[in-house]
Length: 211
Image (cartoon, rainbow, N blue to C red; front, side, top):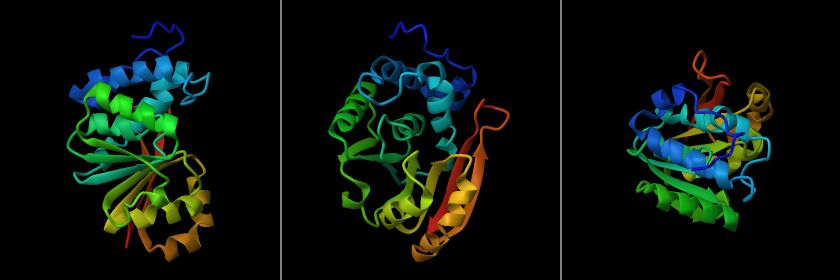
């Protein structure tokens, strides 16, 4: 357990969002608080908002996932991939991350938390050999949609779904990505705002079907 006094206290809503998986959510958050800065996973100013900005921001996406194979692109610290894997043990996750030290962190967390629904792949998404195999793809703070769509859409099986966490400028990103969206047959797109009235900071998700 970390004794960092600057770690944000656990918000009451965390137990609601994680349900009976809250103990694992706490263990992951404590580990990230203890090691995240030294490993370059989170910045030095993130501890006072670690729960609010990162953990809860990720777990609120969990209800959008369905049983099947979900690929998380650029998993980094495990946001959202590890958080979602904790919250949804009924879903299989492949965490795709190219950086060796981040892969080592993810593998260590999978082992320490006893997560049996997670594989970690060291690769760039386009080199991951997962083309056409995934039911859903998630990503958080990776790149703008016009760059992200060509990387993520080919990984999905026909009818697969993008579940991409985006910032407040997502509508502008959609406009800038119109040609790319058509090229990769992305349709039924929508922007979901999650956590309103529940979280201090809402989560925006670009959701769309491919193929």
